[in-house]
Length: 267
Image 1 (tube, helix red, strand yellow):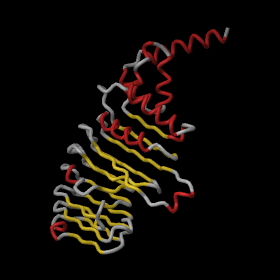
Image 2 (image 1 turned 30 degrees about the vertical axis):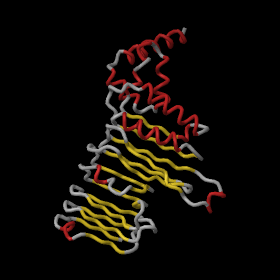
Image 3 (image 1 turned 120 degrees about the vertical axis):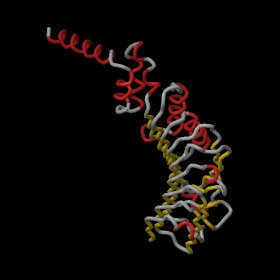
Image 4 (image 1 turned 60 degrees about the vertical axis):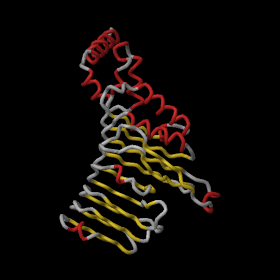
């Protein structure tokens, strides 16, 4: 008797949840994770496609036994997502032995989703024989016509490094955070509206000078400049906040950069 009442109560509660507006359901699904959100598609026809419009997508390879399964899952989710629905956040963390080609495809796919915030971290593990191998450059180009407003990109690998370029103007970008990225000379010129820039363990390709030249940049943080970089030159006439941490060698700062400078921290 009690079990019958329990089933009735569960059905009523299920009905109450199902009649909620999509916007509220999507808010709820944003807190349960992508896997569980997709699982709701089997509840009923009402729920079949709701998950395809969630505004927050967060993936981690720690939830999968292999990188191949992880990348297959991410690719599958992105291919089924409703591209007409706004995407506030795309976040991905991947740690494994390989997957660089898949990583490049996913980065460009993430841009095509027109997300406002994109946060991508790749940690490629290595075996002992790689310790004495010379690193090779791995070109990565942003070619999508859509760009986020905030981009965080980290690439950690002992066997190679990313050389970042762009074939299109990244006009929407206002905040960039790069970690262990090699920038192609001229990359920052492709970001005309950039205001906030953080470079952690970054360098310029083909040069021992890390040159930051941008007419609109207002906040700049340089952290752990690599040993391959002998000097840092900053030409940013609108700069208001400058932080340089663990940067060895000569620091060249243009006189124009101090005209509007309100805060500076050097260590």
